Length: 138
Image (cartoon, rainbow, N blue to C red; front, side, top):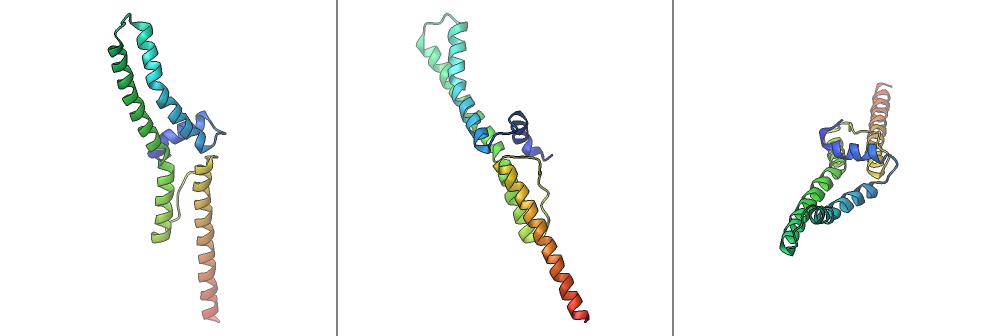
């Protein structure tokens, strides 16, 4: 498995039948709730009545949640980037894409379709070359 697909692969194993948008929603949901959970934990674990301390904790947790969201979203975009690079390699270098075919969401279907189209075009090109070679020999 491609190293850049680890987060996408993990989310696909945890939620095997979910759509890609569900994975993106999960990232947003988790990152938005980091400050809320951190604030609640702070209130429950301390006897601080100073609202500035709570505000500081919530602001730091908001920053952490934002960083988490960007990191996870970057990883969720990796299969799309990998598919684009594979398609580019096929178009420019005639290299058949080697993309994973095991994912069932929309991005998994995109990777699978790129491989199928590239293989189909490669077969058609070989058939065309073969028929040209046969026609010149006659």
